[in-house]
Amino acid sequence: MLNDYNLTMLTDFYEITMANGYFNSEIRDQEACFDLFFRKVPDGGGFAIMAGLEQIIAYLRRLSFTEEDIEYLRSKNCFSEGFLDYLRDFKFSCDVWAVPEGYPIFPYEPLITVKGPAIQAQFIETFMLMQVNHQSLIATKANRIVRSAQGRPVMEFGTRRAHGADAAVYGARAAYIGGCVGTACAIADRNHFIPALGTMAHSWIQSFDSEYDAFYRYTELYPQNATLLIDTYNVLKSGLPNAIKVFKELKPQNMGIRIDSGDITYLTRECRRILDEEGLKDCKIVISNSLDEYIIRDVILEGACIDSFGVGERLITAKSEPVFGSVYKLSCIGRNGKLEPRMKISENVEKITNPGFKKVVRFFDKETGKALADVIMLREEPMPDGKPYEIFDPNAVWKRKVLENYEARELLVPIFQKGEFVYKEPEIEEIKKTCREQVDTLWGSILRFENPQTYYVDLSKPLWNLKHDLLNKYGADNL
Image (cartoon, helix red, strand yellow):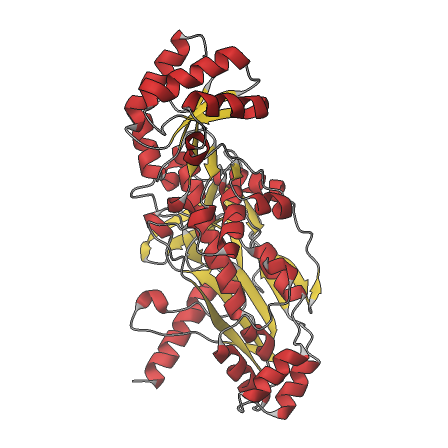
C-alpha cells in the first residue's frame, strides 16, 4: 500500500514544471508558505473530521527522486540539467504544522501549513490534497453514520465498492477514525490494526443442500461468532426458523442473524419478537444493504429492532457527496529575508484566500468543556490569555460576541522542523478516541444533519486588517 513504497512522482505534472521554473528563476532560493484548507462541509453538515496525516507523514519522510525518476523527466525534454541535478540530491527541509487526525475541522481554517523553500513547499501539494480530501471525506461520512446509529455499532462493509485498493484500505482507516467498530477489509486489520469483521455471503448458504445444513456447519466452525445470513430464501418462513433450530441445538457462545434485504423495520421487529419468544434474547440482529445516516435514523425512529449495522457503498464512496474539496494556496513568499503576505482575489467571494503566516486557536468554555469558536490569527500574535476576547462572524460583521471564562488551545502542531520529523504519531485507537472526545466538545446544534448551527470561525483583528489592506491594494492595482 501507499506506506510501502516511494511515491514521489505521484503528483500533478505541473508541480514539476513549476519547480523547474522556480529553480531557474529568482524564486529558486526563496521561502514560501502554503495553507491547506477546505471550503465546504460535505452533506451540508456542521463540521468535518481531519484524517490522512499519517500517510502524508510517510510520504514526506520518503520524499526523494530515483535515477529512474530523473531519466523519465529528462525524456520529457523540458527540464534543465541543473534542475535534474538538484532533484538527484533532493532533501525535504520544510517546516510543517497540522491539525491532528480525529479533530473536528471547519471551512477556511488551515489544516496543514507548510513553510520552506518554494520548490519543495509547492511540490508536495498534490499528495497532501489527495490524502486529506479522501480520508477526511470518509471519516466525516462515517461519523455522521455512527452518530445516526445512536450507540449501536457500525461496521464498514465497503471494500468491494471502493474506488480501488488504496481507497478500500485508507477508507477503512478513515471510517474507523470516524467511529466505526471495524471493517470487512482484512488487509486493513493486518496493516493498520482495524478489527476485521464479517459473517457470510449468500453463496455459502446456496452451496449446501439446505439452508439448515449451511447454518449448522457455519455455527460448528465459528461458535464464538455465529452470525447467520437469513434472507437467502425467505427471512421469516425459512431463514429465521432454521437459525433458531441451529442455535438451540449447538448453543454457540455468541449468536446473531443478519438481514441484507427487505423491509428492515418490519422484519427486524418480527425477528426480535420471535427470537424472544423462543428464549433467544441474547441473539443479535445485524442489518446491512445500502444504508446511510438517513435510513438508519429513520428505521430507528420507526421502531426497528437492530443491534448493529454493516454499511458499505454509501460510506466507502461517500455517495451523497463524494468530493471534499480541500485546496492548497500560497499565503506568503520570501522577499529580502522576510515573508510577504500573498492572497488570491476572485469574483467568487468564497475563493478569496486569507493571507499571511497563520495559526488556528480553538476556544473552549471552562465550565462545560464545549468548543466556542475558532480564530485564525497571524502567527506572531500572542495567544489569548483569558482576558475577554471579542469575535465576529466574518460573513456578518455585525454579529459580535465576547468570549470569557475560556481556555485557548492552538490546533496546528509541529510535524516537521527543517525537514526533521518531530511529531509523535498516535496509534489508531488513540486517534479514534480523540475523534470521539473532540466531537463531544461540539454543541448539539452543530451536530444536526439538517440546518446545523454555523460554528464561529473568526479572523483576528490584525489578520482582518491585513486581508482588507491587500484587497484594497490588489483591487486598486487591477481596476
